[in-house]
Image (cartoon, rainbow, N blue to C red; front, side):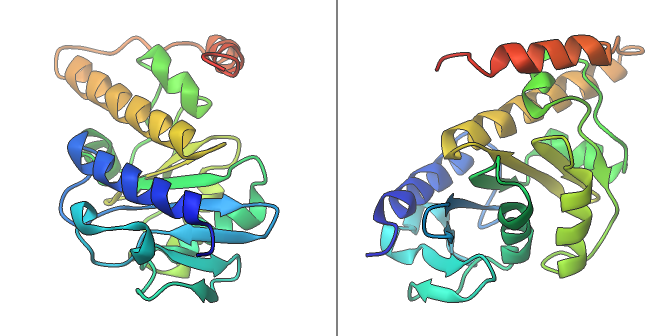
Length: 212
C-alpha cells in the first residue's frame, strides 16, 4: 500500500477532529505530503471519520492525479495541493469547521492575537476572500491569505492550517480555535487587549523548539 503510515495517521487524526470538536459529521479534511516521493495522502470525500480506515485514504500526486485508493478524494483537494506545491515548509494540512473560528470567519475579519497561543500560527490569522467551497478560487484565496502564516480563516466557512507534520498541524488548529474562543468571549465583555506583533514573532520562534 502506498504511503501506509501517512494513511493510518490520517484515519487516526480524522477521528480526533470529531472527538476534539474541530468539525462535525463529514465536514473538514486532512492530508499529509511525502516530499521524497512528491505524493500526498488525503481523507476521502463524504465518509464519516469514525469509519475511515487507511485503505479509504486516497494517494495522489501534487497535481491531483490519483495514484492509489478506491475512494473519491476530498472535494477540497485543490486547497491542499496548492499548499504543498508552494509551501515546502508545510507537510500536512488540516481543514476544520470548528465553531469559534467559523464564527470569526462568518464576520469576515482577521483573528488577532488576544491569546499568546495564536503565535503558533505565526501571528494574526487573516480571513481570506470568500469563494465557493471546493473550487480552485477558494484554494487560491486560502493560499494567498496564508502567506507568512500557518493558518488562514476561510470566509463564511472555516479554518485551514498547515504544519511540519500532522501532529503539528493539528496542534496549531486547536490553538487557533482556542484563541478564537478567547477573542469571542473577551469581545463580548469589552475590548480585547491584543499582543504586539514583535512579541508574537518572538513567541513564534520560541515555540519552534518547544517539546522537540
